[in-house]
Image (tube, rainbow, N blue to C red; front, side, top):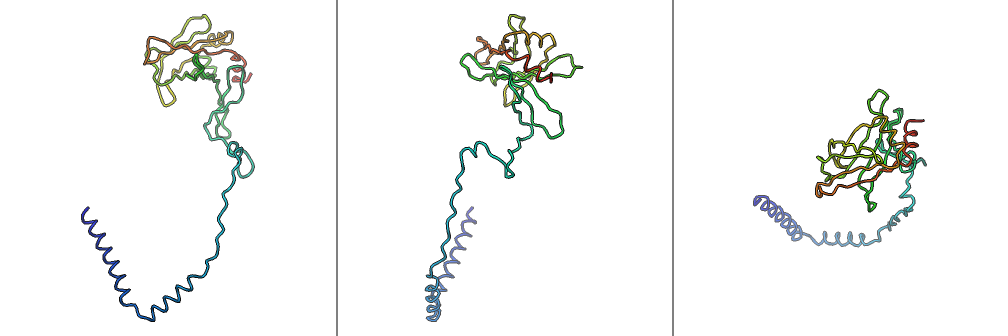
Length: 224
């Protein structure tokens, strides 16, 4: 560190020394030339007009369009709502051109104070699968995983499903629904998802899963 500082000081000393020497050896003729050059430099420089800031319309910021006048493309992998049926949404992924459409049903679950808590996704499975539908239930981080996710349709029997993993979105319980269970959801009025917070294990949290519009949403998903 000392060597670096010393080298810097030496360099500065050389610079100042050279400047002083140049001042001492200046001749009168050189001084006159310098004066004339300074007078010429006093001539007024051309004015440069300042660029005016572009005024951006607030609506243009909210609803941008591409340069060719078409709406900007939504990034591949984005999930967008295609249609709504009661309390259910049909959400589809934006995929590369030529790939078959991939959609699923979606509902946001809220607590008694109307705060968003969990997400419930339903996908239609291939006919060869044992299950009729596949569910991705996303519970918030901090869920007591050993208590599992419990689902009950109306006054039916409660079913428990284990949580498989957690990521930045939350903790996911992935499970299948048989044809009978899907039919029960079509005929039912509401389901209840029960989870337990790790910070308060003695007070389970019940989240209402509305079944209003489920049949229409399921039929739309299946292309019926």
